[in-house]
Image (cartoon, rainbow, N blue to C red; front, side, top):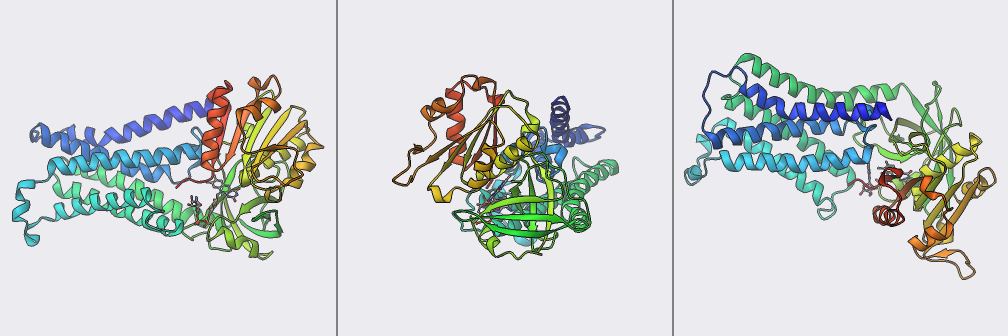
Length: 437
Ligand SMILES: Cc1cc2nc3c(=O)[nH]c(=O)nc-3n(C[C@H](O)[C@H](O)[C@H](O)COP(=O)(O)OP(=O)(O)OC[C@H]3O[C@@H](n4cnc5c(N)ncnc54)[C@H](O)[C@@H]3O)c2cc1C
């Protein structure tokens, strides 16, 4: 925990440092006078906006030491917010610096390159944010959006850096230009690492599909074995990025949580629900298919938070990382009390139901299934998980438990509110969101 707090402080410090670095570069050793308050202010906004954009590459580079202190979904959330703030900075910079009175005399041949590059950078950024906010409305598939997003991000940063160098006023000396080039190279270097070096490393550690097990509903379990290497160690509840039957260089890989015990060596399993183009094809995957696994990632794990007991709240296939944590507790012979609230539509759509049932015999585990389309003979809980349902089944000392929630986003939000009502402190509530964009 201390290591994570220290890591968090370090990254926040670095973040602030990178944001203000361009301003410091501009001020240090300049022989030129300022250009008046509004121009200088506008340039400062542009510099900070550009730094914020550069940092975005680091936030999504899946660097474990960056995401560990905060959690991957918090980093993705931050990425989204920083993108919005960066856009506001850049647009304000454009609004304050553009010579609006000259617009009526606009002539393409007369417009200097620095203006074209500035406009290209700002337009790419605007498109990037708009396509992220309205991806579904624009009917962009997730994979297409990822390609567009990556391409626009590179265009925005390259065009903006070229604009800075062409304007030149605040980066007039050789060393300032060199510093700008180094900063830009660092961000592009990240891209090379993510798209080239890491896939090369993954290619040396392939996995193979050992078994394909159809589950209830539209879920399929894939059991994977390492080929020519010992496999990987993970914490129960963590996830990895999987390229199934695809090259590790493919632009898109998919995140899935491990559903197997962290104590079972040499084999991993994932439970995948058919939710879209790619996941609908998983049931047809052949044993022997090659898989590349980039992980483990995430901090949604009992190994991160010590408690007198655990309460898990699962919705649909959100039960997958929870089954991994339950299986690990059982393999470790853990005797602490555990309660699982498992919310589903129908009884026949509950994924990993048999695994959970088997684990009740190996753990001090109470399972509460909550169905919103119960069969006629159902005597258990119905509807959605409510405060009453929680009160009915939680042991009296639940205030000493750690709480883990995984499921669809609306369920996560509702469960966080319910636990708040029950007086569970925020630092005991841990969530994993399966839908980021
Ligand atoms: C940390 C994490 C763990 C997950 N664990 C599981 C799991 O154990 N089992 C399971 O069934 N699902 C899990 N998911 C969800 C799973 O990744 C998506 O359902 C799957 O990628 C959908 O892909 P698709 O092409 O079939 O669907 P699409 O129709 O292309 O997309 C459906 C939705 O899935 C999400 N998605 C699609 N592709 C990606 C991607 N490459 N990266 C991130 N999100 C994507 C988007 O929100 C998208 O709107 C997890 C997601 C995250 C973020």
